[in-house]
Length: 497
Image 1 (cartoon, rainbow, N blue to C red):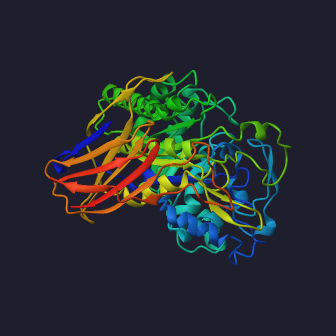
Image 2: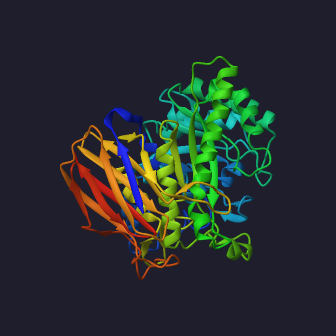
Image 3: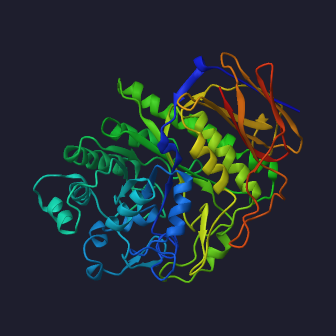
């Protein structure tokens, strides 16, 4: 089977916004407590945050982290999470039927994000709260003048503003499960007026408007049209959320689900541009795919969870090799839309549907999905090249004309590299060929692959066997890069140009 891709410098179509490699920490399950924060662990720093987890997050090169939710944010009072810890209230969280101690709040998390090399993507509560709480929060975080909330921040030990630049206007406000769910008209009007006051305080911030909670929700499309019609002039991004699973144990269909992501993105872009045309606007709304991942392994266990615990075991999917292959396909799909998808958040980061897992009083370890994300985030920097491909296709239960090999190439002029990411979805060896029409290939820097594993193989705190390895089965001949892509494999090829 052949898998050929032609690329050219002149067909670079999008500069990659590094925020496309973002992630997400919600006050949910063990993401915060016993995840990033465990003061009793010998590996934790003086503030109680695990150093081993910090190092794994740094390896992922995550430029932005969404916080504090998720569904949690729709019942969150931000004032509970600042100031002296011994004065913070212990609250019930309706979203996940848990107890929130507020031991870790805004000021601790903001410091942690800086330590791991990330910026904060702050979500505001538009469920139980609204304009007033939002404006006060922006004043607390970003205002440098002499005002009540800016001075309160100083009183809490932070003289200079946090300068948070990316903000989410609520979370999944269309979802009937959401605390304070709203109709499109209600939410669009509230988001518009909230955005106006937030940008009055800090005109430099960028705002993400809630799109649909998923492609399959009945109001999808109509929701986007209505909320954009209300708030288009005041916002900068529209969000997308979607999770994927292999409940039917159908590998071919599962690995084709990135085609569904592709169609989802294309559809939302069309809606954004329709409203742009309707409004005769010169502004283009870009996308924030701020929740995406595989999520289904933990569903049965979560149904048995006892409510009203602190940091219960929730959404703790243990990922296998086929999940890593799909995550690779999803990353490639995001890159194929890098002209409009400027922010994306792998949901989530630690313990909760996450690439990183921890054991209480024990180790932190990398799940299978950690590795494709880490490689793309690290090396997928620069410009995406339009892929002209020649590859066989297949049909699955839900999708037609699925490429047997999913591929994309990125040009990094600063480092004089072409980086190609490829997933071989088939059970055949693929004869890969990269042809650089106006590019001279000098040498292969690296050919990394994940292959040869049982599709259900997983990692654990005792073993991280499902991970990439180096291959020498590659050459440059007649200014073409040729390699063998193993059946059911994730591949990264870096070439000096």
